[in-house]
Image 1 (spheres, rainbow, N blue to C red):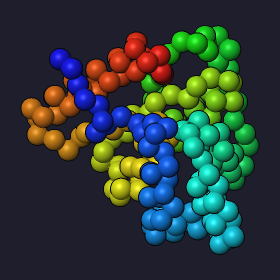
Image 2 (cartoon, rainbow, N blue to C red):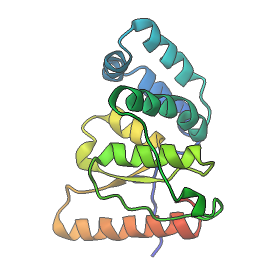
Image 3 (spheres, rainbow, N blue to C red):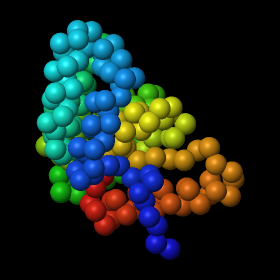
Image 4 (cartoon, one colour):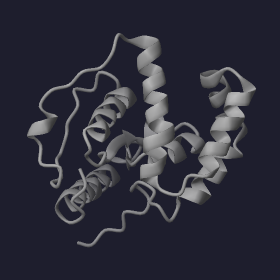
Length: 177
């Protein structure tokens, strides 16, 4: 069976300008940025930076990395890893988290992978966490794909098949972790 993944897949470089424009103009996203960065001047600077981004990789290497570094500096004594040098940078992998923190686990893994010169992974996220459209836009811009959870049992089974095919397609056809 052939699946159309448009409703669950991450956004791509062709969609980034449109989706970033939606975020930049979203008043709730503006409030989130104000909470994170505190100063209006910094919020405006971040929005200007976002408006100049043209690729997902550019988004991750600037805005997302800066955000992760800010989180690490404010909440921890640092972040270390080992074993990434054992991975072939040209191959795709399936990483599974123990689910301590749904968003942060994947963000930290991708930060380490990116800093190690590898392409960041796609990240599964349940639609139950996507309370607002701006959240969906942010996570899909950051290479997340959607796991539909609020479905009837039969529909949930079909959605699970679709996600399974998407993951397999990502790894085996697109060579994307």
